[in-house]
Length: 80
Image (cartoon, rainbow, N blue to C red; front, side, top):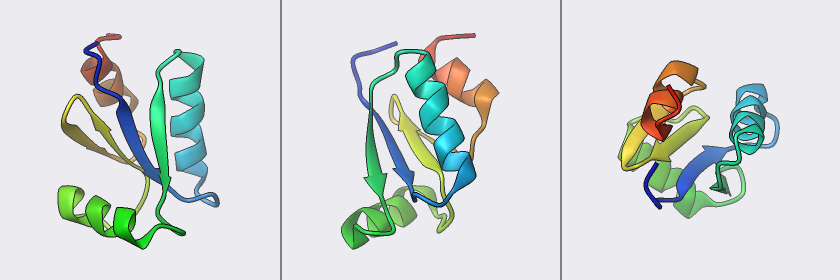
């Protein structure tokens, strides 16, 4: 994996968001968590980059991942 930090756009009440963050933590992947329920600027950024209003959205090595898509996440992280 490159040195790019993974960005995740989440909300505290989203179960898939928590699954994503736990999955990344378990693999030792550092990430920045943006709570889009509290940060309107990051919420707008998430919509701009993904076209989605739903969470989670992750940005891994410049690629947008919508939802908790383990196969795609693993591929982008170089884990598969």
